[in-house]
Amino acid sequence: MQFVASLRREDYYRRVQEKPVPARKADPNSGTFDAERAVAYHVQNGNVEEAAWLVFLMTHFARPASSGWLRLQQVYGRLGAGVWDWQTVSNNPHAMISWLAANWTSIDGKFGNHRKYESLRPDSNRSFSDVLLSYLGWIGLAGHQAFFATKIQQAGNNPGTIFDALYRSMNVKTFGRLAKFDYLALIGRYGIAPIEPGSAYFKGATGPASGARLLFTGSHTGAATEAQLQSWVDELDASLHVGMAVMEDALCNWQKSPTAFVHFKG
View 1 (cartoon, rainbow, N blue to C red):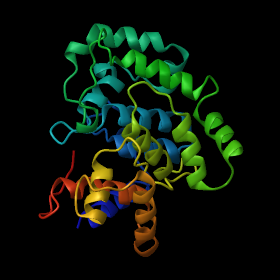
View 2 (spheres, rainbow, N blue to C red):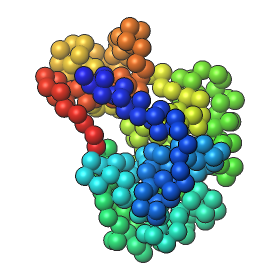
View 3 (tube, rainbow, N blue to C red):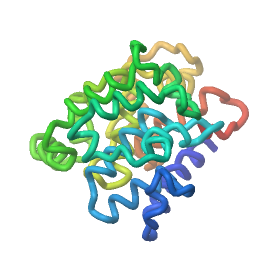
View 4 (cartoon, helix red, strand yellow):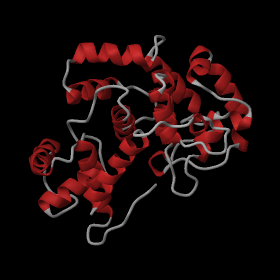
């Protein structure tokens, strides 16, 4: 059942891209903003830079079940006074940093569960300014399209190999194993770069590794190396053909409640 739920999440991203997305869905101040459809809108209109920038913001803020994309929407939409779009921010990131420092107490909503230790407080040791500047440093002045094109040229034609090269190069502050995986999986889902995970990336993982150990050894802490877990997961996927993004997500959610299905949304 968790595999089915994870497959449906993947299918959702395909569905939001099937039809033309109206511009209002990409406008954070329209009242009908939808982050997932906003990325699809920009991809459909050839604006890869804005699409990838939104993927970064989606990954950083994440989506809690309680408030959805409200926090991302209010930051991205400058609390109704404009848009912190890619061109503006990449040309002058300190303008956004200064704005957030002056307005952070007015921002509603929450960070998603996977990013619950982040903070908008400007003097935090996990401040948005550090995350933003390190992200801009990773992407480079030429922007996302040029950055991904270079990585593809260096890594070759295999989607899993390109994903891995990007994963290993990603040095964005506070982006651990899960945030890197989530960001790159979204980049692949939207076709921004021809990538998909060829591994579950068990090193540094908690939930997915615990789920794999429970599934294959009968214990959350069963004796198995990360390489063994990956080998077993590869063998399972050779029969199921769900892919590593679904495998990782399903294992993580299943181990939280292995005897009764729980639909995790946040």
